[in-house]
Image (cartoon, rainbow, N blue to C red):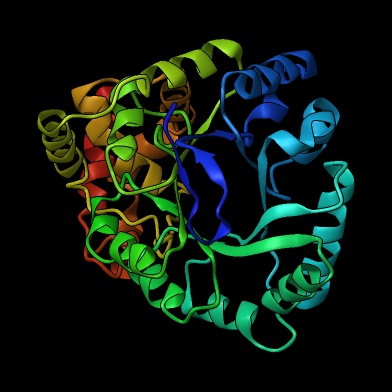
Length: 335
């Protein structure tokens, strides 16, 4: 396991972090075993959020007695002061701790959301108050818009940034700006939420880049072992070049997960856009296959949806003019 100084925190953080979002989907004892195995084998960054069902309670139940062994990060999806304050207090109770090391303003993808959270009476005010009270050590932000995130962190109000590194364009501005400001840099969803494979390459790509921690969602000892194995050896220059080229190739869909698009058939367009190239080249993990099975009727119905035949409604809303309809209809061929 590689360790590095975690930006402004000064904490010696592990390069692999434990993403707890999916723990509510497995038996409690399995979650307990996975979390404790991770701590026993050097993982010292635990990530969760108020919105991840009972993930915070699971952490409190399973590893609160080892609180000094890990850097604890959670998130509030609230945009206003009162709701954020209540979420912060509830998170502390759920995780059986008197403080979190990091609180992130969660999933900020629009200028209007950022403005609401940062204005007087916004969620950031609640985070600052909790920080003054010793309930929060550092404040960060998470989102899926590298272009906007680079501008927002430049304002100097955050100590940490959580972002997708499966979006190669994050390398251009966001990471250099975060490095310049000595922020804690955390990459999320190396497996796109458990969709894509191969696991080793998906983990080693962010491991090869200038980030402190890669958060991977894990729910079993086996998954922890697989993720640890992917980081046993450093990435050499040749492998790094290969991984970066692969990331460019697989990222040619150019989807930023900005979520401006919306589909009248309720197709999850970003997931289709991002997963399709991986599906063609490597296949998908069971969760990814399950997603396409659940979306089957909607995806197959795309070509026959009359309102979209002349001009796709999703493409009208996309700020990047991406060919979403053709990708969705091509995905139908897999059935």
